[in-house]
Amino acid sequence: MVNYSERLDRTFAALVDPTRRAILARLEREDGASVSALAQPFAIKLPAVMKHLDVLGDAGLITRSKIGRTVTVRLRPEPIREAMGWLRRYERFWSQSLDRLAAYVERKEAEARKKRR
Amino acid sequence: MTSLTLVRRIKARPSIVFDALTTVEGIANWWGPDAGPVLAAETDPRVGGRFRVRFRMLDGSEHESSGEYIDVVKPERLTMTWRWTGGVEDPGESLLEFRLRAVADGTELTLTHSGLHDDETRRSHEHGWTGALDKLERHFLVIERSPL
Image 1: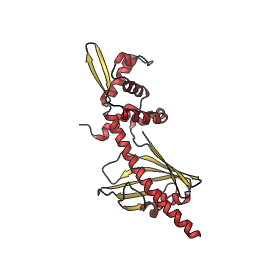
Image 2: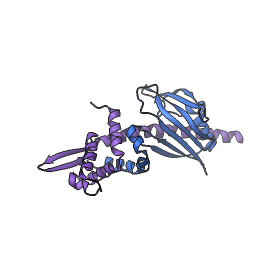
Image 3: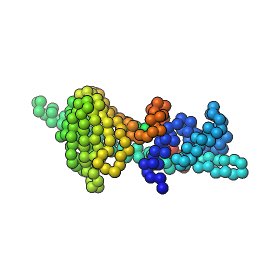
Image 4: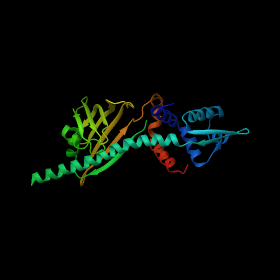
């Protein structure tokens, strides 16, 4: 069982590459595409695309299903949702801390103005 | 690597905001996501100085982070390294930056927490990654919203 942190590592490592992000972006628009259709816009050879798909598959970002001779690739959004959730934890931490910071310094500002009068 | 940026307009002058970010008394009054207490705070806001803050949340969990100040320009800019310490969770070192800009009714504060997810792959791709970050975050959001 791969733990949470390792899953995040894999997700971010997979998303680091622009070709892989382009593949994911396309799969997000189209519900399923064949490997050759996915390879078509890129100036790289099919084996290189296959390698990218392996990375995406290992990270759980895509699924591949074979019908006859055609492999259909589909997006699996759960790892990205998990990565988003992780990022949101930081967002919550800072957003709520900054709310409290603002309340505190606005009080200090009001006190400083009162003293000056 | 990924990063988080938050911008706030605050009705207080930059020097007051800066003090709240860098003094023990200030930090004790706001640090942490809920009304739980700051248990310990240490600051030494000069380049090479260190900070450490420990807080307890209302659910009883305690968290601590520490780091080193790497850029301190009062009352405009504060940059420090950041690491969760004293707990099981350590996703590595990240970078925290506060920028304070004087505006008519107070301060515009920009917080950037970057390098949030560090790993070998990221380091080898850092160049291409940094510029693509905004696009990636938008992409995340789009995927999040799509009815899959």
